[in-house]
Image (cartoon, rainbow, N blue to C red; front, side, top):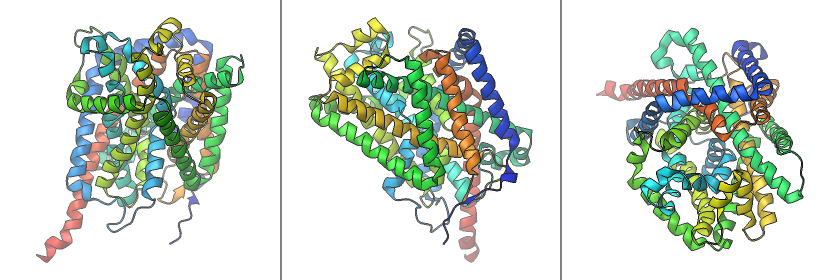
Amino acid sequence: MNNKKQSANPHNIDWMITLLPLIMIIGLCVLFFCFPTQSNTVLSNIRFLLGDTFGVYYLIIGLGIFLLSIYVACSKYGNIVLGAPNEKPKFSFFAWGSMMFTAGLAADILFYSFSEWILYASDPHIAELGSIQDWASTYPIFHWSLIPWGFYLVLAVAFGFMLHVRKRDRQKYSEACRPILGKYTDGILGRLIDLLAVFALLAGTATTFSLATPLMASVIGELFHVSINRTVVTIIILVLTCIVYTYSLLHGFKGISFLAKSCIYLFFGLLAYVLLFSGETKYIIETGVSSVGRMLQNFFELATFTDPQRTTSFPQNWTIFYWAYWMVWCVATPFFIGNISRGRTVRQTILGGYVFGCGSTIISFIILGNYSMGMQVTGRADFIRQYAETGNLYGMIVGIIKTLPGAPVIMVAVLVTMIAFYATSFDSIALTASCYSYHTLKDGELPHKAIQLMWCILLILLPIALLFAESSMSNLQSVSIVAAGPIAIVILLIAASFLKDGKSYLRELASPAESEK
């Protein structure tokens, strides 16, 4: 069988989906450059409206999608092969799992793994629940595990079914809604869904890049003792990262797979070093086991907590942001996971995703987060006070890394791993975005390299604008919350469409047997 990928016909480009987001992003960049204060104010107001007024909307969808993923995996839908009924997996388990994990989580996993417990430690909600030891280590795992990966995996099997079973040649959000929307998929409603998807993709990219890249700039400043403006250094890093993921993308799935596996080796090597040589091994393991157990024991309470009296506004500040954050990432990541899951069953994709993706995420937060928390609770460091006094989260993370043995080497490892994470995440995002630029794209066809290059550059523009605007973490988060509002409805529509079409497919498979009776 010839597995060579062919480039799509350049005359098949959907210029509306390609150019309109480009114009919108350039317009937003201009606004952020020219009116940074006013732009941040508008973002804050919109975030308050969506997060505070309609926050329960995000919470219900998050819990519902997770429960749906378990149902699909355990039901008759789980037997569906994403491809021909007897087709074998396209990639090995390790290569598949590596690409899935690195596509689903960018470098912000390192940023948040080191620091998230500190952000919770000073929150009054943690004091209401109990001790920092118990809850500051539990919430990071909750916010980064079951529900986030539920979003990814439900949509991944829906897209995989659409691509590999139904063989549809429109690789877009709207096409996944066809079983319910029917002819309206090809009309204004379908176009609107695709435009929303592309905008959400760009918003999620901007949020991720803008939040975590300043940490890389801080690490470089510490390593080389340079006093260059952090924004300038961050932009240089963004450009270099863009070059890496562009190079990887233009080499197709082979380049993406190689980069993903390299990233996994770097990532788990870093985790192993911290676990074994930090001097906190016992504390890390015991606190990790306790926090996972506490998260599972209180899962439904955590997932439905709304703080109706707004005593702390914790879910509005954190949980709702996170569910919105994962929703906007759902535009690209599930398409990529569905694409690489060819030959696997729906059950294998969902359960394997939870084991590899969710499991690796939990391990990261347990090791990196509990190392610094162990130093805090034993009195050997006071990171909470350091952050309270300076407000510099990035400098505090550098301070945490400096307490590790062989700190300069670890800083280099963190820097390289973050670049690898960014590259492996955004080459998959750029590939998915490129597919949106075509009216139709057959299975086995790849977007033209010029289109891929355009999206590689486009994905970097908004993060740079946000950095120049010096947006706060809250305002950066707002970008995701705003974009996730309408996308949540589309996610539910895609899930319902998969259930409907999957049921029809199972009847089609059973019909020959029934006719023989």
